[in-house]
Length: 111
Length: 113
Image: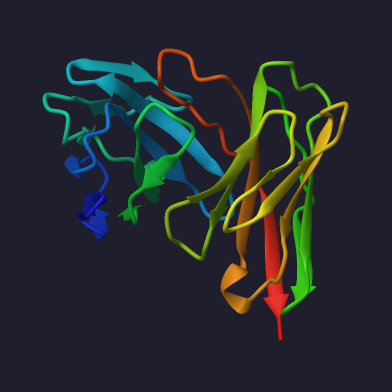
C-alpha cells in the first residue's frame, strides 16, 4: 500500500516548456487535491477533484490544468512554464472525512 | 472559513510538553479546528481535529476554549522528531465530502535537547 505517489521528485524546466506532474493513489479515495508551496510559505490549493471526471479550481489555478479520468490518477499540467511556478507541489487525497493524505512532493524549478 | 492566527515560531525542550496556541476568534458554530504538521520538506501530516470538545489521540491533545475563539495543541512529551511547522486550520463541516483545507504560515516548532 504505497498511499500517494508523486513523480518526478525533482525537475528543472526552461521558461516556456511544458510538463505533467503525476499523482497516483491506491487508497481508493474519491477526493484529490493539488497544492503548491513557495519557500517559507504555507500551501496554496491549485485544483481539486471530487471524483473521476469532476475537477474544480482552487485558490491559484492560473497556469495549470488538471484531468481526472480515473479514481487513481490526478495529473497536473503546466503548459507554458514561468519562473513564478518554481515551487514544491504536493498532491493529496481524502476519503471524505477529516484527514488528508499527502504525497512527498515534486520540487520544480523554472529557469 | 475563519482566519487563524499562530505565532511564527516557538521552541521547546525535549521531553517537555509543547503547547502551540491558535487564535480563531471569528470561527462559526459549524467550523472545525484542524491541526496538521509538516516535517522539513515532507507533505503535511494530519494530527487531530475538533469542534468544541477537547480531543486526544496517540499524537496529541487538542484543547478548545469554551467560547471556541482559541485552541491549543499539546504534544505531551516533545521529541526532536516533533520539530516541524504546525498548521492550525478552521474549516466548515465537510460539504459534499471534500475538504478544501487552506493552510496559513503555521508555527515553526523547534525541539532542542
